[in-house]
Length: 189
Image (cartoon, rainbow, N blue to C red; front, side):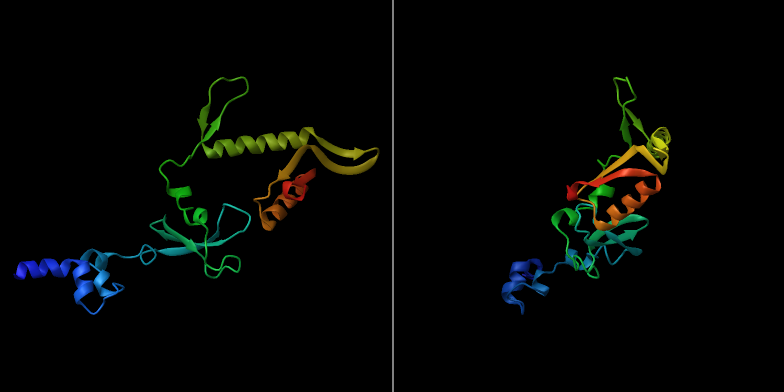
């Protein structure tokens, strides 16, 4: 009988029906396995504040890091924008950096090539920087009709609606500093 009693006591439904927790909201719902569970946020080494990358709302995120690996992402209750809430995409954004299927290289097809090759991100970024500087140099105008203009017609920017005000501000500053004058945003068109 003692063995049956032990088995019955380990069964949550029996504990709920016979114990002081008839609604099953406390001790009746807990098991030995539940008692051993520790929250990922409790074991984190540090918490980093960030902004969700998905849309222009800019919801605040708290990123929990343990051993330099992201273990959990939650809404930031200190954010005046989202007040601790995240949409399903923002809640699942941990997979952006931890998914085993995450792409970590750049696919590149050289001019006139028929095959794609993988490039490291640093190599691709250097190629982009070289091409931007070359386009800026080739399209540079010191004067127009005798008037100094100091601009380039070789670089232009078209921003998107998913960019927030701060990103658009930085893009405007960057392209203006490069001498570009063709700067527009799709959200304004």
